[in-house]
Length: 159
Image (tube, rainbow, N blue to C red; front, side, top):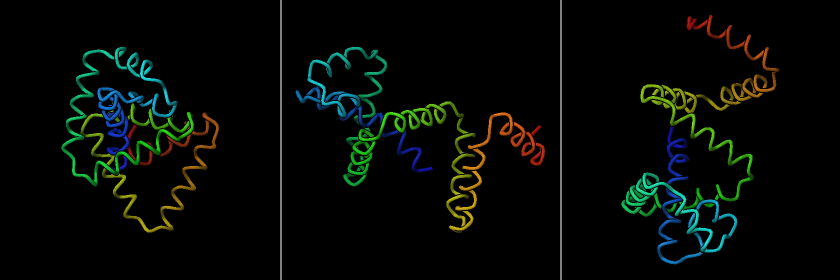
């Protein structure tokens, strides 16, 4: 639950931090520029390419970031630093997960949080077994995955 919120905030805070860096004349102004060490002109071009709505959202997130306690700010900065060092596939996976999260309505998000908490409360051996089963499921061909999902839905009465 907290990890997802944290990851969602990661991008926005990263952009907001870089916005402020740009305003201060730093060479970094976008999440992409952080990893690439882009020159100030590229950072300004990236900022200028944003819509007014995006700029407003970033400014609002920056304000929220400024109001956070120092320890929370440090955690977010550290997470952003880790993110910028991920390989492109890992970054893309995180972006896709964030996109899926944003597409959920509040009730669905709460269900995910509840399930995540339930998982976190399990004993380590049970977690390990579930992770192994998930990996096994992920390795199945698409048609077998579909059969497994249908069978699970029937068991739960979700048809």
